[in-house]
Length: 199
Image (cartoon, rainbow, N blue to C red):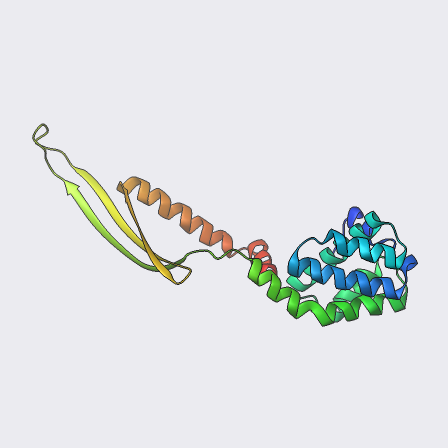
């Protein structure tokens, strides 16, 4: 699978051939640090003085490299696919090898950082349900009013929480149809490709 870069992302990486191998190594280190700790304007200013390159150019280069490394790591792109993806940028073989080495050295760490940044969503634990039917009341002798009560137990950050929901059967049927439709869509090739790329 090839990684496709937009024109803006290509523009961010355009100055790399002029910067040299030392600058690319420094920018790669800054890109990984950006993922670990967040934005560091002082680090970009220091790199700008050391490499004698404009601060904005350094920041755009770091952002471009960060995108290249994160997307490649997220998609688990192979060596050959990564090389093919950066080959279209028109860089020299030496620079392509340097970027490949940067990717291979840092992809496991980048994936672990991205995994930590992913939101922790509640997960299903148990479901209890009860059907209540009101047959009559003081004012109405013949009345049928069904209600479904659902108690949903979820695991959230090693804690169990329970949510009680109550609905009528027609709304519950509509909800079931919508969930079945969503499950059916998950079996399409498009959704499978998205889920595979998210892992």
